Length: 301
Image 1 (tube, helix red, strand yellow):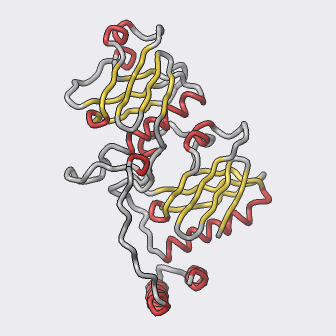
Image 2: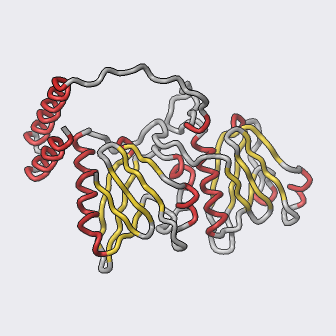
């Protein structure tokens, strides 16, 4: 197992799963702590790199487009401090980071994971319930319903409309705009059957945000949690709605699978070695890449 640790968190990779655990220090961005532990399947990874610097370096993992509802919802709202897929490392951890990168890249080659977009979410999204506050009220989401409540600072139009509660099934789109300058940003819900909304401050389905690290983090997490339960933008119109793990009650146990025999493992190993050999002959893998991938494959078997 490959692992690397820094003040921002702890990353491990076991060949199939990249596990990201945030640090608990005061300097760790609130969004990372709100999201908690992230489990990224190998099939969701598009690439990984270590960028060395004078005082250390940065380990970055890049996910396939459409794999993560957090990235889908956040857009450009994430910066270096809040991005959970970025880990700043001290100089003494450089060797571990490079080994970590090699292990992930070897696994991607062996499993022949593509780097293109996907048509379904491969990560579940933040757990519910969630609540975020803004400059004029708050928004809550319990997995099935969204509710907006207004404070005395809200515009008269929102007070007149009153608190808003609507089902997840009525949500067509979630818009999250980060703070820019004096504009604290906003979180807006587009509902089915409703006309184009007015300005955010008059829209009863839109919450203006404070623009602070604390409340901005919970708004991003809440938006991602709603997005995770909406149809994937790349899915066909007939595709069923996603069902996050925390929404499932007593799922049926999958049928028991027979344990693979040594002969089965041997056949898989030979097939993978032949595939690597073909990639090497075609010039897709260099001699060094072929040797490294072959050694990693033999270790796994």
